[in-house]
Length: 420
Image (cartoon, rainbow, N blue to C red; front, side):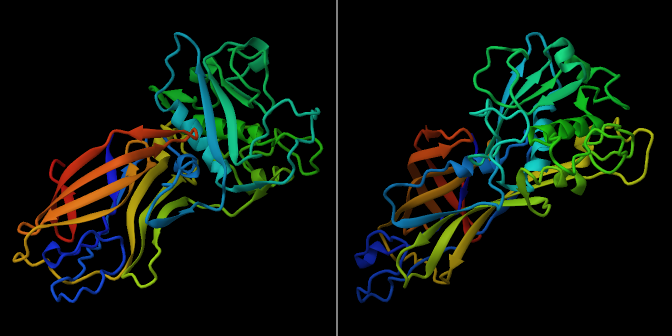
């Protein structure tokens, strides 16, 4: 597991002056001119590719803050609060494209990032009491089952189909719950899948991505014959992704018309390519030179489409048209000290505080306790140890991580793990 520690913010009280460890505020006035706070303000921004289409929203929603801390925590989430909980069921002996599930996650995101709330908790068609399925969005989650490679005869006679309500007869029949379903049959990987094919050379094509996004529209209850504006699956050519013609002019992402046809069910917001997530530790001491510190993640998901008809555009890999990256930034609000720790001081300075970090393999928040110590005769190195470290995942679970430590070398205004 790789962890990007964000950021190490600390105040030293020099041991030669009888100090101890700082807690994020100004040091006490003990009448020693050499007792100056050292507040490095490292700021780091790194951008990572997101090949598995991880959505940080799920794990950030589930993060648990330390129960005992010197700091007050707060969470900053995007306006939309819909996280995807995707259960995947792959048929035996089926080897789907490696990007199939990530592309389905992205097809869901191009819808849910514009959905901010549920207007009507129960669909207005096939209503039962109680509803025989989990309505997407009732608790801020969109839960669904993704069935891959199952032959289901006439129940899903096309390459891909969706059912807003769970269908207990779709394979595999032993899956739990009553989640809405999208089923990708073996025909999805065949050349006959819509014009240009949905899979080529082991990769989902742009047309295949459009098919996925089309089906996910049904998960959000696009099909509703009582909706006065319902026109899905009519020959509307290029007006929206929910049109059934799938000619070359049909887009690969939902359009305004598509979102208009789910407004009976959801509150829709303006489109955005970026989602921002953050965790902040606020300093309780109002007189502190440091106000708060934390991490900020920005996920960018852009699906670029050519505006002109090209003979081979829909058969090209969808990845050629998709930007999916996550930027992780350190964020510090405070006044940095310009004082340098003098080498004439002896002893060890120690700081105890909190770790705020990001697991850069899963893009999930990591929190724990931090202890930093420095030999004042050699200020180019820090010893850092982190204990009681936990990672929150996208299922609502919190996992304990083995305690670990680093030797950090000075690099400009930051300290970097000597081991890389």
